[in-house]
Length: 122
Image 1 (cartoon, helix red, strand yellow):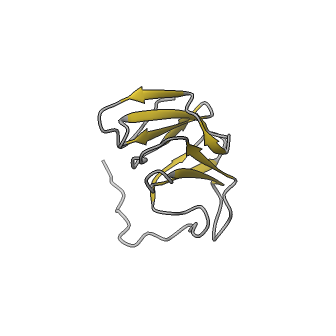
Image 2 (tube, rainbow, N blue to C red; image 1 turned 60 degrees about the vertical axis):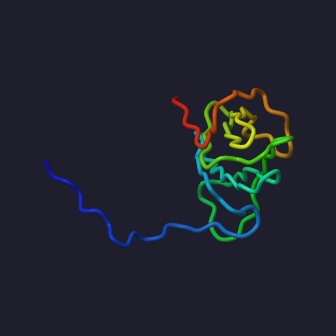
């Protein structure tokens, strides 16, 4: 069995910085080609959405905030146009509309002890 040699200095494909990137911790890409960046900042935490091909300093397509959030965890995920975000301080995982910007109430809030990361299956 042959194994590929790992790259010791991989080439950078693109960089997103500036507006919409504040303490990024988690990333996920949905089936429609949208890149979601989890920005952890206590009650000011938000998720910024960009086209997966974004580069440079683009403005996000939209930003999602959760009303009454305590602090987002490190990992987020999307499935079927829903966004799942852990709130480590509140002990909840929020289910949100992924394509709806602004502050929104969760569609559902699942109680979980110290959630830090969320992964869903197709």
